[in-house]
Length: 110
Length: 143
Image 1: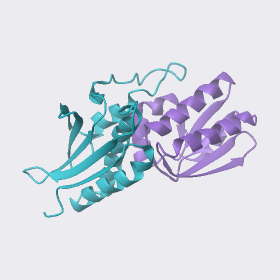
Image 2: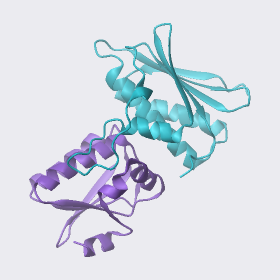
Image 3: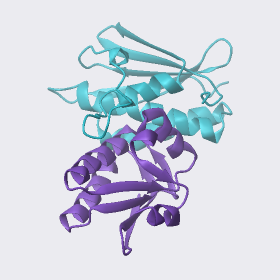
Image 4: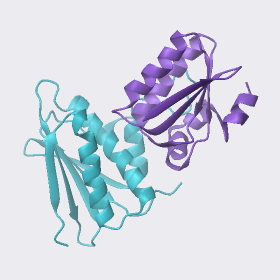
């Protein structure tokens, strides 16, 4: 798993490549928490290059989202592909978060 | 089919996850299972194995054994066994998938994925072992 972040005017875009599984989820969650600790409360997760996510990854997302909500922040998603899209759908996460086709679209909605 | 049955026994810790996933993926590939379905099988295996790593051996280290074999119709059967405390993970309640962010939990979600992606999965306790038997349909789960 690789994580790249970039600051836009209205949000921080977090792009994740590879796999978020039970092994990598703690590192992913740590990265999200570090952004929040730095005062970034609007996050766009660009998952275009994410190949795989398990319930461990969803747990990290949910944990970060709960903390963001407490700060009046939000988390948006963009670019979900095949298996990741399926997991969001099966889990009901698809209706819990705003999901956009592209990062640009997500940024326009903020 | 001399490549089957085949099995692997490793310590029941997160450090074994990758090895076990590669093992099962290779079994599925040898049975001609497509990449999309292999991704689903990987997810199922991760959820079941991580449960075992986390809960099967609360007081001592132990092993997990994964075996691939073929049933009498040539279908792939995967068996996961541990010698830990008896626990039927399939009895877990499905999570509430409609709750809002504050009320939402992820408990039970992994097993929900498993049941959604594998039609035929059984639990039994035998000879001091918890055994899960998965009959793997070669086609991806219907949407």
